[in-house]
Image (tube, rainbow, N blue to C red):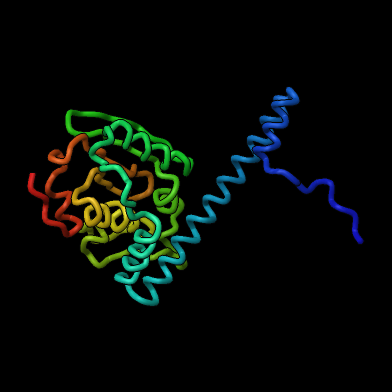
Length: 222
């Protein structure tokens, strides 16, 4: 029976960071933290590429409408609010913006924040859909699918990268179906280097009518 390889990690890098800190070894803690970050980035990139490639396959084999159906099923199974879920409008915009920011920053993005009387605007260097665009994943012989059937799932655009369709389908179309109104309006990037913009509105009446119309919804009564 071969001897075990002493170089194989037997605990996670974060556990090793904690142990190094307990031991007072800051250099080892920094090294393990760097390793943990590299590993997390690699797993993030792998998972996002996997999702985007699967959605592309669905579009190529079954058509763009099937992409929406697949995303809708995910939303219904994983994202639909439960009976005890709070009304989003009872949660301050600052809190909702913080939740959005944390999710985006977890993908190794960055954010700039602006605020006016109606909304908080978050401009992200997106670490998921934006990362795919920046990396040229929608270009070349093995390009991911770009949706081109203009309608609600493309935010009424002529073109939308397939990964970004979860923003229209799950985050906006289904949000209105479940809750009756939008609280966040999203503008995915259209070219490398562009920001992904999220507008978090402070009250229901401030959400502009075009935000509803672009996802095929009649604006609600104010």
